[in-house]
Length: 330
Length: 169
Ligand code: SF4
View 1 (tube, rainbow over the protein chains, first blue to last red):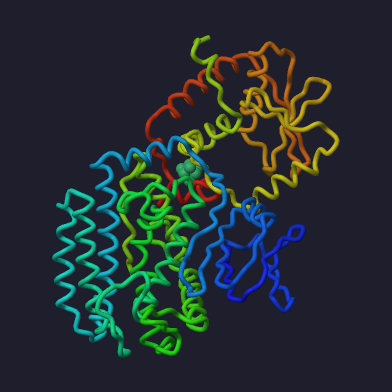
View 2: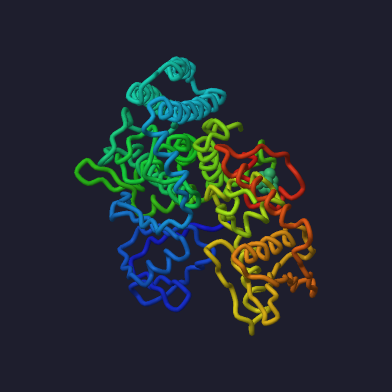
């Protein structure tokens, strides 16, 4: 499996002949094994040149850029090589046709809420009293099937997330002040973790879409244009509970992350470098975790589950098999 | 000959896939192509580049058939990395000969080179082959023209097929 490459230092990313290396400010160099690299995550102050980007395009490697605060700013998404005009037409058609769009939007929310409930049940079985919120969310979930507008679905989604977040102080053993989701900029530790991890999930989804014929600009649950690569947002919805949320619960409950891993500037809250490294390490391990896929009857990594999700979407779009969002089975 | 058939242009790969698997043919013809397992691609390239260094390589005709090389004695060659002689390869080459015949190029024969096997296989357009090829082309047209891919059963070849995950997920 190809690896992600994370750069925290400042310096320069360079191509020389057929190798890419990172040159730190002190002049020391490390080589990036290009044939084995999936994406590059740039957290430091880094200089790039076009020669490098040309090479990365040739190798199909994306670069995800984060600012000083660890806030995702954007991706270099190389020219696509796997194009299918026919599939693109179908993808657009599934967006413009109201019924077709809602079918897909529902599937995304259905599996997202299934995966959220799975998280809650896990902790409920471990002695946290979450019965109430489970009931509430099951109630919301039962409205998904009959909701006939994307706005309505987004409303249900919002209700589910609100109820879910209210349960977080019960799930998390550390003393946290977390009442609601505040995005940009995050106002406390938990919000900072959510923002950071969600952006990682988003970039992973983007990377997997890149390896398929799907067009990342056309989405179904989210409005195209909400973010440039909005299809990534749709897919991330399904995987956030499994990737982001579970990591947050684990690292906080294991005390791997605490107040000292954050920097607070006028009420905004960001992970500091050490905090980011801890989270990335967990995230990277999560991506590499292997499970046996029931339907394919073989071993796949968590990250590969996203690619398989893309294939399922392709099959839905060409009318071969109806899409059913990923539901965690373990 | 059916008029419509003269206008269809299928690539050698499509002829090949017709014999291998119709589902694969459908996906491929709809530009749903899978990222290749890089090792296999690399090996293919290596065999191509090193095996027949001296000959002029890859002649593209009408964007439809791509002949690996043609030797002076009017033999078209196809290089395959496979370790056994396979039926689809033979038909792919018969199709090339047929295709050239349609364009008025007569007296062509074919040779498949299997560098891994250190073996070659001669290919001729035999009596009855014209009709067979026309029938195959019609079938390919029907398969690729369908709005959804044909259903398939899992077979032994699925194990090494690049479309496996798309197919069985
Ligand atoms: S996996 Fe099997 S059925 Fe599917 S395309 Fe490949 S050979 Fe055909």
